[in-house]
View 1 (cartoon, protein in one colour):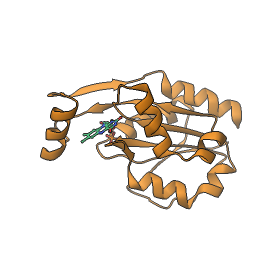
View 2 (tube, protein in one colour):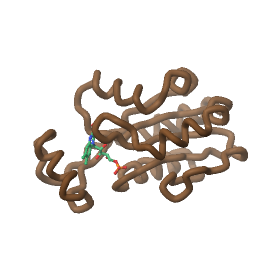
View 3 (cartoon, helix red, strand yellow):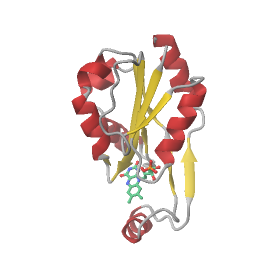
Length: 160
Ligand SMILES: Cc1cc2nc3c(=O)[nH]c(=O)nc-3n(C[C@H](O)[C@H](O)[C@H](O)COP(=O)(O)O)c2cc1C
């Protein structure tokens, strides 16, 4: 049984979460959509897919991947996650809905908000200015929900 953990990332935090999910599964193929935007998923029994939220929206690579592979992911056990730092629950739900359309959310074994990180040394000038203004954050912060990778692994193993 092999699982693909498919992710998009801008600054590496989602890659870190994807890696933790693969470890919690006891091994999985890690597929970075930035490196391979059109992976062949035929040989995988289960799919985990996730990406970060910027300004309330998913990154394009993840949206495009899900649109192009809807049939494949809907035919397999599927777990979904987003990385983000939005504190408001209703806004988190809206971000999840913007990332994964209804058929995906209904089919998935679960959808997780995994938390995220502001890594100042990796952000560009504009991104720093935006988060200083909007989130009032002026230094690197990491708020990852450490139990999420294990929860995803348990849900995927139960469904495969
Ligand atoms: C400019 C900027 C805008 C962001 N906007 C949002 C947002 O609207 N909602 C949210 O939940 N997180 C937001 N975040 C937080 C990111 O989702 C978080 O930093 C995430 O860990 C990034 O993942 P990545 O390193 O894989 O790209 C924003 C971060 C930056 C730098």
